[in-house]
Image 1: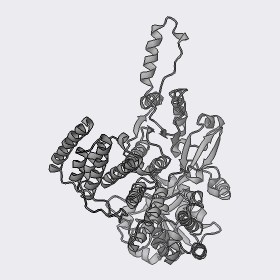
Image 2: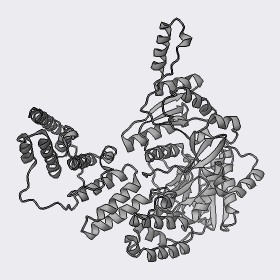
Image 3: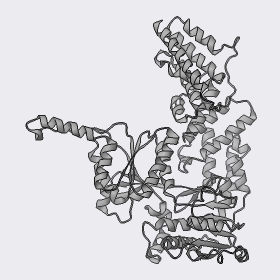
Image 4: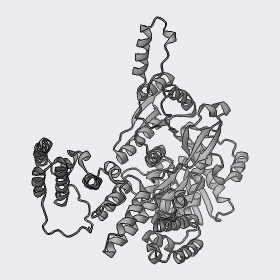
Length: 619
């Protein structure tokens, strides 16, 4: 009974601490929405204090622990989250049966969810299949924590299970809507990959998403295939009522531009970028599937604010769409005219400006690539990344964006080391992999031997790192890779190395490719083998556009995709599941009008570059 007494004393101290903290804090925690439970009715509802008394009087530690778990549940019901979490954190799970241990995990996860600590909550309950008497609470907690940690497939599965324990039609409809919202976040390759005969409802949802992706560009074919899907799945929730966003998308007509104004820097400092975008737009305009729109290019470098920017001239020209400008200052100028013409800005707006319903933003910001890399690593299950980044402006921006996104989603902060030269590269690798102290110890031991050459030892690197992300150009990455290899102990597992698009260059030779062996990197499809299934276009541009290079290729792709997006932008805005396969990636549009791109992943492998599909079982 000594253990029980000590635990009770510890609990009293914890509760006193909570009381003192709460006196100095007024932070309000939003409770998790209560779900109908299927527990057997109780003759008398016991309070947390009742359970604490039972624990104090328990015959042994195991029984006491059971009552403490019950007390924590009672506190959760009374919205005493801090007390519940403190009590649960003080308990020893060794004294619990599997059933009580699962309850303990659920109650602790619910506490964490109330504090929006989703990354801590999800691992506690992700592997619990069911929990008798607490099914609805379990599936709700699983769905909320999974969705907020980007495990969208598991979130959808949990919501499907949750519906079996709901009785209110409105609650069930809400879960159907949330299932759709979770699943549209999956990469398109997952729509068929995760279909399974033993997951009937989920597989049907994924099949519907696959249809919307495959036939998004043809409203007629999309509707035909949706009707066919509904006939094949008559009892499915979406067969009876399509998701609201999909209904809206079907109601939006495809836009056919007739006269487009394109604002680009065609002279001056940024003329090469402007000309690359211009070439991309022209290539899209004269492709076989394009409309017969008239395009007028306007050089923003020749603007004179008081003369060239006359609103009446734009109205008289009867433009039905504007693409550009590229530079933010020129976006501010054009935006200030108040023109009621749909616009696709080619950069992000300043923080104080918001996109209207007919405005869209398409940018090649490097931060977006870093955030996508962080999201991919989270989906693949990595917990402890380190970042090696060039100490230039782009490197610092990307590293910081990666760190902040990974931290926000997992509560684990990646370590970053910047470098400016080869010496700093070596130092950065040794610092993050912590091989320096091990090398020093080996050196000291060797000095104790009269013949140190006969003493062989390998430095040990830290074991908690599970992935490395490199933000550097191709030459820098070639230097970093051997440093990483020599600082990895022969007996340790190899740490996967990922890199940004900066690590790839079309000028790499066979020796360079071998130096980068097994490095996985992200890039736009247009720069990778296969050229985004546009081999003919690639050959045409090689012969026509002599000044193209790696730096300008993304701008060509930006122009090409910008023009091809015009007919469907309005539809994409109301339907996040609409995905356009472009040269810059798989493109979708946020509800706010921002273009979002899924980049491709490739690997340096045995002197070649191969496209890879990085799909996790937990999406």
